[in-house]
Structures are given as structure tokens and as C-alpha cells.
Image (cartoon, rainbow over all chains, first blue to last red; front, side, top):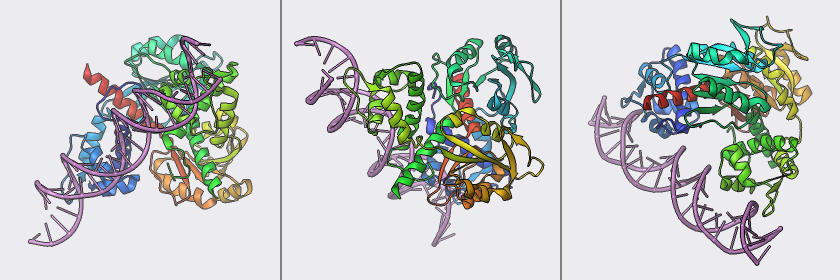
Length: 214
Length: 214
DNA sequence: TAGATTGTTAATCGATTAACAATC
DNA sequence: TAGATTGTTAATCGATTAACAATC
């Protein structure tokens, strides 16, 4: 967590996002009510945790029926800030950056990627979906003009801290950090890490450990 | 965590991966010793946590100097299973799958992506770096032939559970799940989630919450 | 009505932090 | 030597689970 900006504990917020994803699937399937028990089974939790988590929301369930999926989706959306469209820019037009720029689910959930930047002048000008890669010198202007909220760091680990500073300087309020580095940000800026390589290493540990046991 | 396969608590394992990343940077910079205090500052932790974490490893520091970076890197590598090369396949040759297939840092850390698959016959045959997209029917044979350890799920949320089952059936021991869905796996299979969209939603919550306070 | 399910309080469990003797 | 830093134990803090009265 970058900053203690909210009052709901971080582990709960992370599960709220999972509930939202799952509820959206249920609604698409026409399910109108869901119990804490059913939700728990689908997501690998206990019903106690689910009820505890949902008690942070402005919603109440009904005995014998559970929670109305339509209401639950609305309330989760609102609490997670998903009722507005967040503007984001990506820095780093490598494979990962370009993939995220055109990642359909982001747009569907209200994250509008409105720019992609790279320090390497040789990739500037390249088309990425409906965007064109811009040089870092154009970053501040775009962030200001489009009132960009979020910067997505998809640069090599060596560049991460410096690019983070450029993004903060340009005025973004939050960073999604995909570079495998811990970045320091000033008070008031939020950072969430998405370190896929570290996830792989966690998996490596689990495999290694389970293998040793045999 | 998919399975309680190891004896080191999950939060500690996750930090060990971070230590490893950071130590590799220090070594590249020629740093030979590092104290728990310095490590803590670099990674946003307390020195107490660092010492507690490192006590799970087969290493000891020296008063007034700290830990030798060379030894620490070795021991972390070994504990995280990074002293062997793990074979992995990707399922889903969309933007994200293709980006991961050619992601340089994975290879550098000993994760060998040796196949990429897709259910859509129109993308089968497409070149992705040094690989060629194969159809799902070829999955079991490759997993067996190459003794693949890890399956990487980069498919749309609707397909995730089914593809996970195909991977497990084919014989992988662990899954890295990039699809925004909770997947159920049999006992003995490890799953680590890398849900970027959920990370973005956590960020959305933080921004939303910090904005409300003003 | 009887049984299922919520909402909430209390109990347990686990993770982080503080403290400090040992030691370089 | 004096001061810095480890390794470890105990204290604190927070998250999860259990339990159960209220209620539909």
C-alpha cells in the first residue's frame, strides 16, 4: 500500500475486487441472489470472512436469501471507485506495456488508457492500438490536458524509480508498478505493485518445497 | 496460496522474492555487505521484519557489517527454487500471453517458456519470438515431452477454469493465474494469482478514498 | 412453524514490531 | 574500548474464524 488513504483494511479491499469480478459473472448468468456461503465457496474463503468483509459496505443481506447481486455489484463498484472512469497512461512501450495498452478488460472496467510513452526514441511514433507511442517530453502536457489519474510503470527495473518521479512530477495521483523494484513516492501518492516475476518466484518456492517433501 | 506446500509463511516468501531482486541490483553495483536497516529502508520495511525474515534462511549475518550480498543472493536463490530452471507454458496467445512469452526478465531468472497455446485456430501457427502458437490438442504431448512444471493462464476469465483443468490434466504442478477468476485445483497443485485488473481496482479504491477525504 | 442465513461480538490465530542480550 | 548490528524472545497489533442471537 502506498498510503493509508482509506479506512477499509487492505486485505479486505483486495477481496472486494474479487467479489466484484465474481458478481459480474453471476449477473451475466442471470443469478439474482447469492449467499455468503456460496460466495465463499466460489472464491476459496469462509462465509464468515465474506460477511465480515461485506459489513464494510452500505448493503444489507436478507436472511434465507443472501445478497441481491444487482445491489451488491453497484455498491462494490461505488466503493472501489469504479463508478467513474479513471484516466491512465503507460510508460514503457515494450511487449508488456503495449499488451496492457490494448488490454480489453481494463477498458471494460472503466480504466481509460489515454497515452503510452517511451524514453527510447526509436519506438516513438509506433502505433499501439488506437494510440501512438510518445516521447517522455510529452508526458507532462498530456497528463495535465487529460487530467490523468494513474501512471502504469512498465519499464525495466533500472528505470523504475526515475520514471515514477517523472510521473509524480507530471501530476498523477497513483501508480501501478509492474517493474520488479520498490519505488519511493512522496506522501499522498498511492502505489500498488503488480510484480509478476515475484509471483512466479513464489510459485517456484511452492513447487520446490512440495518436491522436497516427497 | 494454492497449497500449503512449504514451511515458510506466505508473506515472508513474498518478501524473500523482493530481497532477491534488490540484492541482485546491489551486487551488480558492487555492494558486498548490507545491513537489515539498509535493506529495510530500500524496501519500505522495518529492520526487525528483515531480520525475522532472514532467520528463515540458512545464513547468518555479522555484527556491525550485516549480511554478505553474495551469500545472501545464493541462499535466497536456493530457497526460492531459483537454482534450477523451471519449464513453463503459456495458454492464451493474446496480447498479454505473447508479451509474457518474450518477457526477458523471466528467462533471466530461470523461467523457460517453452510453449504457447491457444484454442483459437486462427492464431495457431503465429510466431511469438522463437515460439510458434500451438493448438490445445498439442498441450499434453509437449508438457510430457519437456517435463513442464508451470502453466501460465493468460486466457479470458470465462475460459480460465477449464483451461486450468486441461493444464493440470496434462501434468503441470503449478499455475500462474493471470485471468481475473478464482480457479479450483486438486490437492497438490499450487496456484499463484497475478490479477493486474484487481491491482488497478485496489488503486482505484485508494484514489477514490483519498479524494473523499479532501 | 422450522430452518437457513445474516450481522456482530468474542476468541483465536498469525504477523509485525519492540526490546535487548550477545557479539563483532 | 565503545558503538553498531545481529538473532531471538516477548509484546503488540491486526486479521480471520467461530459462535450465536436476531430475523426472514
